[in-house]
Length: 274
Image (cartoon, rainbow, N blue to C red; front, top):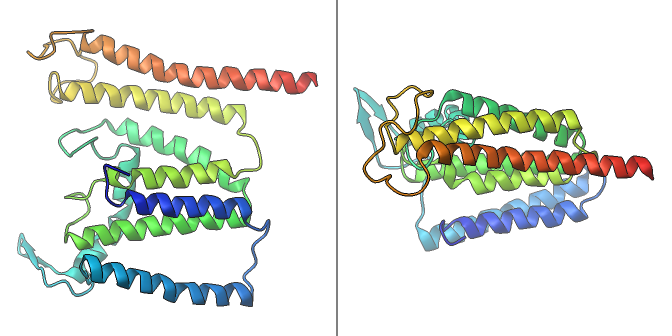
C-alpha cells in the first residue's frame, strides 16, 4: 500500500471480493433481478471512473494524440491497444518468471516460468473445480478486471507490453485472486498434487535464485552450472560465499514444503484414528 499508489484500490477490491465470497449464495443463477442489479451498478462504476478521471486527468485510450514511429511503422492509440491485447499473455507470464525480477536486465531461465506455471495451473484448476459457481464467477471477474487494468496502464503511458509497465506492479493483485480461489474450494488438496507442486516450485525457486545471484556476481554470460564463487566480484568480501547463499536459500524453500507435507500427514493420521 505504501510502495504503489494504486495499492489501496487493489486492497479495497480484493477486500470486497473476500467479503462477498463469504456471504455469497451457494448457487448463482442469471435471473432478471441479477441483470437489473448489474445494469444499475454499471452506471455507478462509470460515474466513479468519471470522477477520478476529472480529478487526476482524463485519458482517452482510443483517441490519444501521441504517435510513435519505429522502423517505418506508425503506432497510434488504437493500434497500440490491439497490439497490447494480443501481447497480454506475455505480460501475465511475467508473474511466473517470464520476465526478469526488478527490471529487464535480469533474465531467468525458461524452466522457471514453465514449472511455476504448471504449479499454478495444478492448484488453481483444482480449486476452481472444487468451488461453487459464484466463486468461479468472482475469480473470472477479478482476473478480467486485472487484465483491463493492465491494458489501461499501458495505454495511459502509451507504452507497449514489455517496455515500461512491469508485471510486479500487478503481482499483489494476481496473488490475491489466486488466494481467494484456493481459499474457497470445498475439498482438500490431494497429497499427490501437493507433492508435485512442491517439487516444481522448489526447482524453479532454486534456478531463479541462482540466476539472480549470478546477475550480480559473474554476470549472466556464464553457464548455469559454473560456480557462483568464480570469479567473486570486489564487493562480495563479507559473509557466506554466493554458492553457500544459494544453497541455503534453496534448502530453506524446500524445507517449507517439507514442513507442510509433514503437517498434512499428521493431520491425516489423526483424522484416521478418530
